[in-house]
Each structure stands twice: as structure tokens, then as C-alpha cells.
Image 1 (cartoon, rainbow, N blue to C red):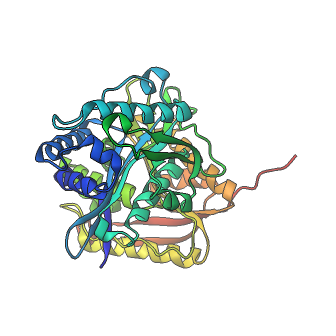
Image 2: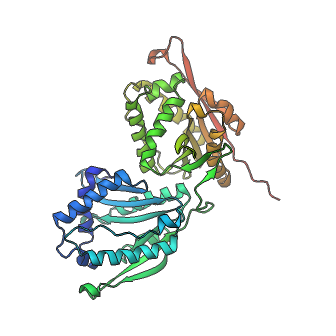
Image 3: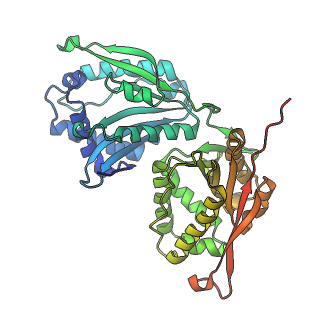
Length: 436
């Protein structure tokens, strides 16, 4: 039966909590924390916590795996994507809110010890933290947990940060298989609450990908602009708004994206967020004005590092007001050109680069290009771009060479009489580092 990976939603929270209780049914810690078992009080309490965190916590990500035939959530993960934080932020004491029918004393004591060990290891550095990964007992062995684990690893690789988790003995082999290494082990003493068995928890780390650093910030040459990876779902609506504004004068892209309206922005934001959460090749990077905190430009890169990896499916949905026939033709035409030229080679695709018009001419787009090109050059990979007319000059400046074109007569798709527009298909060779 096929499985589908997708973001967890507010409507999933109670099902995810029930799944979590079922998955830990044989865990001695759960028996101590919840002596009355899986009660509706506990389920409702934690489901509400999950729903609130989806809205208020910018670092937390829920990802689920669903059995497509039954619609059942069979596995889910809870990841945190932490940026660099001050000691005041990461070392603040917390009381974990347990439901009224739980063993609150035991819960806070156990969690405090785990948090203390994690903070001693990771401190204020940026890292990805796997807080929860559970699979329904009747669906184990289907690869769902590996999908959820790999999702988080891909996010960590995108952000150039390490990944950290606390493993049970039963989960240890899976995490080791995916590159996590044991740092130390905690023996959770349950005897004060009548359970002499106890339980081992293993602290594990997957280092940041080779050639990367744990620093996620880099200042651009434009004053008060900082380049950062996109990590929050909340970022995607402003990203979509900038995309519409940036392409508002492009006859082709206006017909493809749809009108510059809030409805279009919401649709595109959802599309981009789905790509962010489900496409392991996707890398979203934003430029932030540090004086206002506003996102003013962004880029989407696709890192196709494995030539044998199956391609992502073509989009099947389009914004209201977009010309669907042109959308499909444009998507297929440029993809065919690219896949023919790059067949059998690893490469990077510079997919989207847009700047809020009021911030144009400040070199921000160049900084977003350098972010990806630096990594391409380090790996010796070519880069592809389908360039609009307004961007051709910038891309040539960075070494791209036009090798083909995709053009369309737009009149029959709702454009002006005799109007023709298209994109230049461009390849950039990697720049070799000069030794000595």
C-alpha cells in the first residue's frame, strides 16, 4: 500500500497523540507518567498543545506519513529547527505542562534531566532536534520512520546544521543507520515511582554535512540585509507576495502565476510550503532587512545531486486566474530542455530569484545567487537557470551562458495581440578554486 509524506495539520493533532500513546504502550516511562493509561483528558490536553504550537512556535515542524488507501496516519515526527540562540534563550528553566491525571512530579523530573543533557551538548548553536518519531505498531517495517527521519536530515543539510535526538534502545539501530552517532547515555531512574526497571536514553548527533558550517547567518554587501535559510511556515506568505510583485511586469509569468491578489498569494504560499516540506532537493533562502525584520527578497534552489533520483511530479494545480494550458506547456517545455541538456549529471537549478521592487538595485539578488553558487563550485557542479528577460544581464554577470530558449505566443493564452515572451535556458560551469 502506498504511503504519503506531508505536513501535519491542526486537524491531525488528536490522531497523532493517540498514535503516540499506542506506539509507547510498552515503554516503562509512559506507564509511570500516565498511570491511568490513555485517557481522554490526556489526549485532549496534548492535542491542544500541538495545535497551539503549530500556530505559535516558529521552530516546530510536524510531518506525517499517511497510508493512502486507508487515510490513516501511521507515523509522524516532531522536529525543531533551532537557529543560533543566546544562553538566556536556550538555558531558561521550563515546567512541562502535563494533564491533570498524569504523574506530574515524575514527568518534570524526567524531562528536566533530558533537557539538561541536551543543553550541555548543543548549547546555543543552530541545530535540528528530533523530539518525536513514532510509528503505529501494526505498520512498522514499511519505511515510514525512515521517510520522516530523512525529511529532518534534509532540512538540517539545507540549513548546514547538525541534527540531534534522544533514542530509545529500540530506535537506536535506525538512527545509527542514518548516520547518527552516540554521544552519551542517560539511565532514567523510575524507582522513586515504583518501577525498578528504568530505561536507557541515548543522546545521538548527526554532524552538519561535510563542507558546511553551523553558522546560518551571513551579511550581504547591502547594509542592514542578512541572508538566512527559510525555516518557518509563516515565511511563505510574504515570499509569495514578493514573487507576485517581482513578476508583475512579466507578460508570461503573470499569465502563469495568476493575478496579484491575496488569493493567489495564499495558493502560491501553500505550493511553496509543500515543496519545502516534501521535496528533499528544495532549498529556500531569504534576505531580511534587519532594521524592520521584513523579508525583502528570496531564492529557491534545487540541488539535484543524484542523477538517478526520480524527478518530482509536475504541478497538477494552478492559481485561480492562471492560464492552465500555458502553465502546463511552460512547465513541460522548460523541463524537457533542462533534462535533455543535464541528463546523467548532478547539477543545481536556480529555480526562483525575486526581490521586492522597492529593494531593487542593492545587490541583494547577487547575494542570494552567491549562496548557491558557492556550494555548486565546492562540489564542481554545473548550474541551470530558466531566465526571464529582466534577469538575463545579472545571470550572465555570474557566468551563465544562454544555450537555448523557450518562447510562446501569448495572444491565444490571454496576452496582448502579437505578444511573445519566454525564458533563456542558461548553463553555468563551476568555477575552480585557484590553488596557492
